[in-house]
Image (cartoon, rainbow over all chains, first blue to last red; front, top):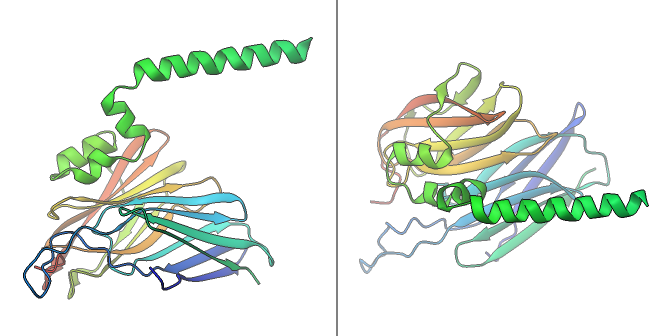
Length: 103
Length: 153
């Protein structure tokens, strides 16, 4: 959770394409660690992406989204100087928000 | 005068709404309104569909891409692009995962109904993309073969 998300937002033809790489173990609760104990469930539960103050995408995730989740989507609009922010919350109550400025 | 009336009407409308909502939102409907918790906990496709609002009808207007053979079931790239007008929600399900419902995306106005992400696939099975548009459910499916299971087991 200490690692920031990598967000790349590219403007193209009146739309903005966003690619996000989040840093999260996304444990399903089914994996066993080296001592044979089950690693507890720990995954991102929801994601909110905003363009300035407008929510452009919301997502709810189970544990089966891959570790270090990748997400790509596109919304219309976007101009230099605008911010794109992504926030996630996980099942342990941890949260992280990162943002980029379009340019 | 008109301001007072409007205010009164809006207050009473919201009060009636709250009353109706309080009475008429028993467990199942509540699950549909809020995070489909029950859906993510479902252990079979049928229950996951029920939590999403019903069985979807197959549609050729959903472009669903996933690898035919995934070498690593822990990281399977999938892409869902919906060409159905009015798409508001895209869900991804993996039939033979312990919990088939994997992700639900709510598409805001002005956002393209196009999502790319990576999911875990435990074993060779069908993947489903369910699109909700104008209150109706549509789906597309693809079989993905997995050589190395995705749940770390």
